[in-house]
Length: 291
DNA sequence: TGCAGTGTTGCTTC
DNA sequence: CGAAGCAACACTGC
Image (cartoon, rainbow, N blue to C red; front, side, top):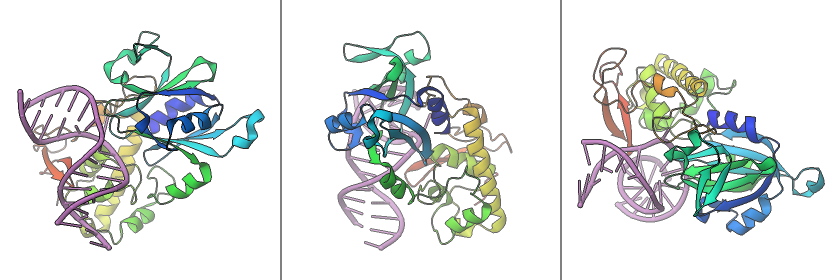
């Protein structure tokens, strides 16, 4: 998400939405009709691009001539396979083809079901193979209220160890599941939870209530470390995720356990295993991640 | 060929 | 009521 935000900020900030196209209206959850969405978004300008948990948020204004339309935000949740791309395409036989040669031609970038035409001739696409992604247009103040329900952002300065301990206090269940609960801590998914638990030498099935202060501290440090590394390296792209220019992130170099079942643990040489934790695969080293 | 599995989340069911 | 199950969907690899 951090990588997506950074890439978008460079390219689409201060541009206006000229029009929007889709072949999968279900992606637009709010307002209910696509035509209404289209009418509302037209001519609104992107004033700020930010993130809360795994939501990408564009704060909009109507621009100097359209002040009465201020106060809206566009929310995009990319879910499993969605990713936002910026470039130029043309529609040929109902499929979007990139105008120029390059990474946007890669197959994973061609599942475009939503296309925003921006001012200045640029375009922003949502490529989404499994079409789970959602897009919503909110009144900014209502959206902010909604987002307050989420847990704290682990990359923010105010995410102190005290705060981490506090949000986990009274929680029960397996630590991996709790880490992935967006209402407890925002932004941690299946990859980074596995990675953080490896760094903290903690077993994914450890009961979160059983973690002592020392274990909590190393988990806290591990979460920050892994997410910072993810943001620095441009994200994990072994599968579908791509940066807004269509290229891959480099987090794969840092990936210690996720999808490494059967391989050797780089820390202790143990054999990496997989198990199901709350219907998700958890990858871990049974030799050095303690229960 | 068939089926489990896939970076998510929210609704339904027990 | 809280936790588990499942659905949304397309595609891959065993």
